[in-house]
Amino acid sequence: MHPLSLFLLFFFFSASSFNVIGVRGGEDSGELSNPFTPKAYLIRYWKKQISNDLAKPWFLLNKASPLNAAQYAGYSKMAADGGESLSTQLPGFCSSANLLCFPDLSPSLEKHAGNVNFASYSFKNFTNYGTDRAGGVDSFKNYTDNENIPVDSFRRYSRDSVGHDDRFSNYAPDGNVIDESFNTYGTSSTGGKGKFSNYGPNVNVPNMRFGSYSDAANGREQGFSSYSDNANAGDQGFTSYGKNGNGAVNGFSSYGTNSNVVGSTFSNYGQTANGANDTFSSYGFNGNVPENTFKTYGAGGNAAVETFKGYRDQSNVGDDSFQSYGKSSTAATANFQNYGKSFNEGTDKFTGYSGNDKTTFAGYGVNNTFKDYAKTGVSFSGYMNESSAVAASLAADAKAKGKKVINRWVEPGKFFREKMLKSGTIMPMPDIKDRMPKRSFLPRVIASKLPFSTSKIGALKQMFHAAEDSTMAKMLADALSECERAPSRGETKRCVTSVEDMIDFATSVLGRNVVVRTTENTEGSKKNIKIGSVKGINGGKVTKSVSCHQSLFPYLVYYCHSVPKVRVYEADILDPKSESKINHGVAICHVDTSAWSPTHGAFIALGSGPGQIEVCHWIFENDMTWAVAD
View 1 (cartoon, rainbow, N blue to C red):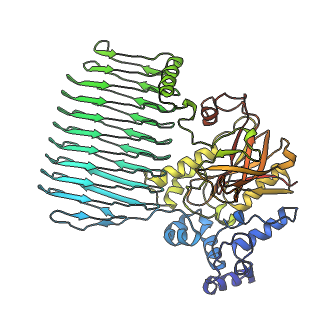
View 2 (cartoon, one colour; view 1 turned 30 degrees about the vertical axis):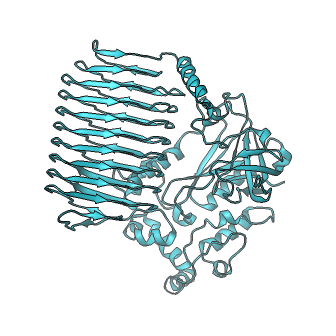
């Protein structure tokens, strides 16, 4: 056996004490005393590739893998087969390497007789809950409350129950990366009520699914008082909602209000239902770039009443689609009191809008398409067919309320003009806190052996135990698709899966005499700040830079790109009242915005359009920008 192999084998059994401990601002003696740790190797690599002797960027180097020498050797060997062996050791690998992985839930065969009240509950797979329950009430007061990565599943909930009430007072609030599912909810139940008072509020990256909701229910009342309000960047789906129901009453008082880039899908809504009465009091109100899809809505229904009091009202851009609405229904009534009346137009499509229903649009927005709809029976009280008309209407509404239209969806301070970067300026700072789950890079020798392309996503799903419609599966697909997207005009881009890869990309664009910077901390977030001393990098001249932003992936992956014509600044950030220094910020100003979309958030916040103004923004926590050293 090679001497190095013997040495590493020795460490595999005896060196478990050499854990890497991240230390901001200096080198930890424990991590460097063993030259075979990933971090020790990375520091040597930095010294070799970077030509200057400036202070090392510990905010970056501390993202190196925390594997000790023994783990590094063992997992490197296991990665040689493309991750198949690592898949068999996934929990230990994820824990040791500080990765984002979801627990594998085993079925819970617990039986709960009688009325049950759970004060707090999380991380459970209910195989069968409340089936055949007669009367009574089951209540979950706090379900996966404030969990970072909650994963829960109800395979059957209240199936065939009679006169039984179900209540979720708080379901998955304030979570981070969410994976919650109900395979069946209230199927074939008679009477009773099902209520979610608060479902998924303030979550980041939700993936919440109802495989079957209230199908074949008889006279049962179900309601969501609040569904995924204030959520960020995720997806929600109802595969079947109220199918074959009889006299069921379903209501969403608030659905997706103030959410950001959230997709919602109803594959079968109210199909062949009899006497249904469904109401969305507010759907997607004030959302930013919503993606909402109803694949079939009310098909084959009898005497149904469907009401949207507000659909996507005052939302920003986005796309909505009704692939089939009310097809083959009998004596149905559909009321849209306000449809798509948005500040900034999106796209709304009705592929099939069918013939026997009585449909009313009290207010209808712009940029909407009816490919096939009823020749009679559809009433439009107000139809806005010019974007200027909508803009004028909404601007008037905003003026009456004393609000600025352009600032409605973009957080104050997220984008600003270059002239604001002057000593003494008081300005709002957005929330620059990193909302991503905490993770580390993998060592390059491991990351380079694992699949990383959409063509090999099946192998990745297998490695990370990702079910087809799970949060993990979507996370993998989204990150890889973004990495494989063609660069925009003038952009040079690369997704990096290790710190070594990031160093190589930055130096390939800028040369070896580089500095990487980030904003020092998160102080000042969501408050007014005062700008102290300001320094322009490269003398404040237009320069090249490489900016790197996190992607959501099991291990750290950064999307790094170089764009032309930017200026980079450092600025002391002060408390406006005490004028004491609370932070040291890094800001980048894009001088050329001509290739940006007219609907970019910067133009919504600042006015103007592509190529007409420069746009600046802060470098957020755990993002960074590289530039040539002064």
